[in-house]
Amino acid sequence: QLTTTTCSSVPQVLKSCTEFIEKHGIVDGIYRLSGIASNIQKLRHEFDSEQIPDLTKDIYIQDIHCVGSLCKLYFRELPNPLLTYQLYEKFS
Image (cartoon, rainbow, N blue to C red; front, top):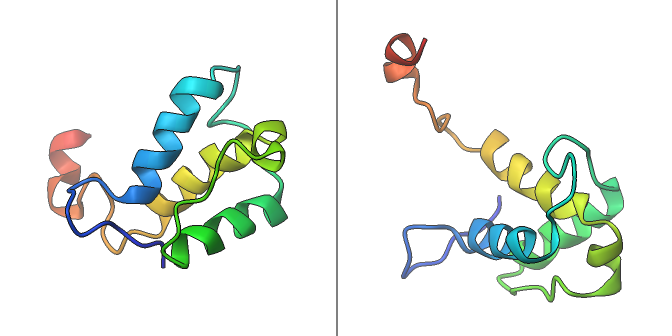
């Protein structure tokens, strides 16, 4: 499971990834296209190890989509959806 920070309401993985995307990832399809699976897993492992990875490494700069893919993976693995089941009717 992707880890969160204890002193912030925004999980570190989301904070780091979105800041990186805002700075380096303004490209078409940043969240639509998937990154390379091995890069996504490497990045996930770094966050799971409670490290804040250096997203400016060439591996992540060259495969910017793996950072967006990790954000999507985080949301998919939430125990309850961001748009909760209880509020689904109101959203639709």
